[in-house]
Image (cartoon, rainbow, N blue to C red; front, side, top):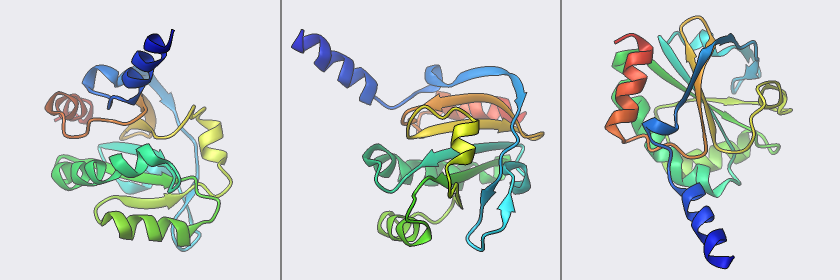
Length: 165
C-alpha cells in the first residue's frame, strides 16, 4: 500500500507535458482580476492571440518552483502572440506577490491579483497551480492542472497551434 501511495505521489508531482494540456470546446470566460493599481481587467485586455491565465500563490511550493519556467515561456513566445497572466490568489496582496516575484526574479509575465478568489471559484480551479488557455476571444480552449513543463517543445508546439501560428 505504501508503495502504491508513493507511486501516485510521484506521478502527481511530475510536471505536465503536452499530453497533460486538456483541450476543450471553446467556452466563454468572464472573469475580472485586478492589476497593481486596483483596476479591474479581463484576460483579453492583454491582447494575445493566446492567453495563459496562470493561477498561483506565494505559499504554493510547486508554484514557486514552476514560476521561472513560465516566465521564460513568456519571454520566448511573446513574439508569437502568447501572453501569460499570472493571477495570484494571495490574501496578503501585493506585498506577498512582490516579495515572491522579486525573490524568483520574475520579469516577463503580467502580474494580476484575484483578491477574493472569485475568478478562481468561477472557473472551478481545483488547486494550484492551474493554467487556463484562452483564445483571442477570451474563451477557454484548454487547461493544465498542476505544474506545466513549460520548456517541453511539444507543449510549446501545441500552444503555437492553438495560437494559430
